[in-house]
Length: 208
Image (cartoon, rainbow, N blue to C red; front, side, top):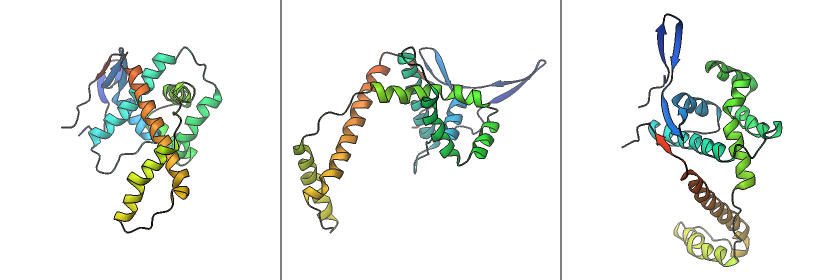
């Protein structure tokens, strides 16, 4: 298990020095275990049921790597404004539950508000780039909705003794689901293509 205490305190004549551990590098730029801890505490990310701590840390690390890759790829194309930061800041505030709790969390990490702003910059840029640059979903033909209804929805209802709703009734929900699925698939492929151009080294131990 990855230790909860991620920083080692070394004492030198000049005073205490905090030593962090490198979790990954992206073209030589570092993501640390301390970054992962802060992301877990601040960002809306939760450990899944039966997910090991190692897997959880690696999943959060993968997000941080994606933020850094996008920052390296598009950092010079966008000027971030207060409205861009507001979205992520609102997510963080909701995650904390109140401003007082957020300030307490920042205190635990010895972070000032300006340091929080700098820490979330890559995530803010990532969200902006996804909104403006990521590919839009392809047109969804009605035949795809009909196929899903007949292949997935209708048999599922019958299998569990539930009364199937009509295709007309289910079309809006099925269309929303399929569009979301296609968007996520295309976005993942788009991000993977960008990541392939960068040298990414992961130092965290992967679960067996």
